[in-house]
Each structure stands twice: as C-alpha cells, then as structure tokens.
Image 1 (tube, one colour):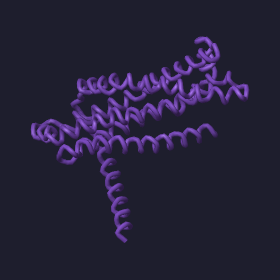
Image 2 (tube, helix red, strand yellow):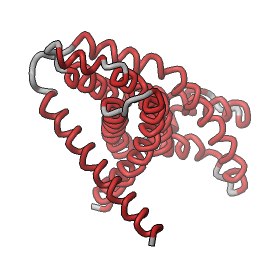
Image 3 (cartoon, helix red, strand yellow):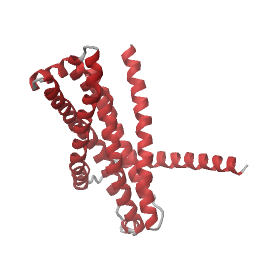
Image 4 (cartoon, one colour):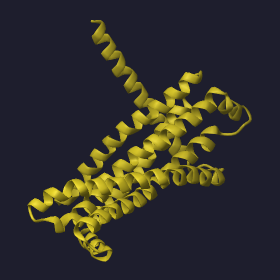
Amino acid sequence: MNGLNKIIESIQLFLIEIGELSYFSFRFFKEVFKPPFEFGEFLRQCFNLGNRSLFLVGTTGFIIGLVFTLQSRPTLEQFGAASWIPAMVSVSIIREIGPIITALICAGRIGSGIGAELGSMRVTEQIDAMEVSGTNPYKYLVVTRVLASTLMLPILVFFGDIIAIYGSYIIENIKGNVSLLLYFTQVFNHLEFSDVIPSTIKTFFFGFAIGMVGCYKGYNCKKGTAGVGLAANSAVVFSSMLLFVIDFIAVFISNIFYDH
C-alpha cells in the first residue's frame, strides 16, 4: 500500500510540475511583447549561449560524421551500395541525428548553465532584490534567455550538420578516394526541402524547451546551495525528456504531410 501511495504521490507531483511549467511558459508569451525590451541583455545571452557552445557542438558533429560513416560503409559495401553513403549520411544527419544530438548537447551545456545561474541568483536573493527595486526579473532574466536559446539552437544545429557531413567526407576521401566536389554534389542532389524545412522548424521548439525548462528550474530554485545543483541537474533531465517528446511529435506530424 505504501508503494502505491508513493507512485500516486509521484504522479501528482509530476502533474503539478507540468502545470507550473505551463503557467511559467504562458507568462513568457505575455511578457515577451511588453516593453521595455532588453536588447542588450538578449544579445549578451546570444553570445553566451551560442558562441560558447559552438566548439562543443562542432566537435560532437565532426565525431558523429566520422563514426556514422565508418560504421555504415562496410555494410553498404557488402551490398555494392557504397556510392549511396553521401546521400544516406546527409539525409540521416539533417533529418534526425544532427538536430536531436545537438539539442541534447545543448540541454547539458545551456540548460544546466541557465538553471545553475538563475538558481544561484535566487538563493543569494538577487532576484528578490530586483523585484524590490522595481525591475521585472522575469523580463530581464527569463525572456532574454529563452529568446536567445530559441534563436541560437537552429544556428548551432546548422553548423553541427555541416561539420558532421564534412567529417563523413573525410572518411569517404580516405576510404574511397572521393573528391570534395563529387561528395557534396551527391549530398545536394539527394537533399530536398522536405528534408530541411521540418528539421529546421523543430529546432526552434528544441531551443525554446531547453531555455524554458532551464529558466523554470533556476527561477523556482529552493533555498540553499544544494538547491542550485538540483536545479541544474533537473533542468538537464527534464529538458532531455521534453526534447524526445517534441521530436516524436514533429516526426509524426511531418510523416502525415509526407503521406499526403
């Protein structure tokens, strides 16, 4: 009986958190169109979230391109389909692998950073001081970071995809002596707008989810230094779960349009 009560209590807490996160998100849409607009802070957050994540995203993308091609090439060679590697790799990376892997990397890098930063501000009562001084902390801290992550993630995904495809080309050049022009000609011959547009649209939702969850966890951090670590950790876990849900919905919707 105690086990059942714990399960019910966990479900209730989860649903309560979903409701609070939904309210936190609705407040964003109400605040984002109200002046004043914090352009300076927004640009600073774009630099912090985008530029500082670029090296990690690029390195991850490059390794993905290398490993994916190395793993796929022996099997395709057995079927005499090694010439299809550029098309297969590019479509796979741009449609699915690039966006979701980059988003997960950013959930760890950006989500935890935002959660820890806002959590430490909550614990040290800086957010309370902003409220007392008449400043809108939600506008200054949350709106700017969510907008920055929503804008930066598609750009990071774009760079990650390009670097991953280039990593794939390096393996093809070593193993199959394929030139750069031939490789990218095959890549662009097999890519269509139906591959690029849906994967690009969902990256905006990925960025919004990462920024919103990170801000929510940090903004509502419990008192104490332990709460900061918990906020950062739970921001990564919750946003990663949310990314898979969003990805499933996006793929499901895009497949409906493909079928028609």
